[in-house]
Length: 137
Image: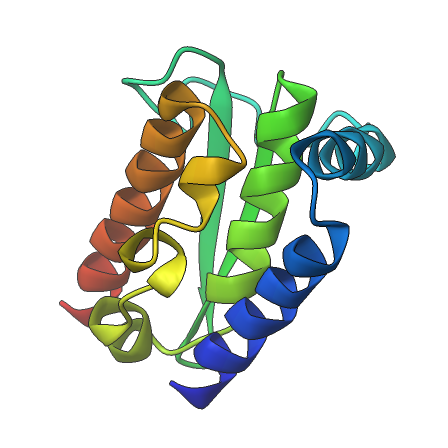
């Protein structure tokens, strides 16, 4: 559980140093462009529904830990999903299920991203938790 908190705080520190909305968007675009590849998991089985942009999540389980890969056709969402997978990937399913991100409790992302993008991030987190439950069963 501590690794989740630590990773999330690291990411929030990055955003807090950028300060302005414009700087945050520039950074998200920079990160999103760096993740410019065609992953093997781009198929309809890994495509999330309910989002305006196409978002793919791929999960695998190894040595009791869940690993997550993500991709999106939107550069900004691609960067945001990258950060979310950095937080949640390489963790035990029970830790993922029990972890409550403070990104939304403090509404930190609300000031940086649109409501549609914020909703997409919530859908991603819900899918991550759902997969964690599946690995517990």
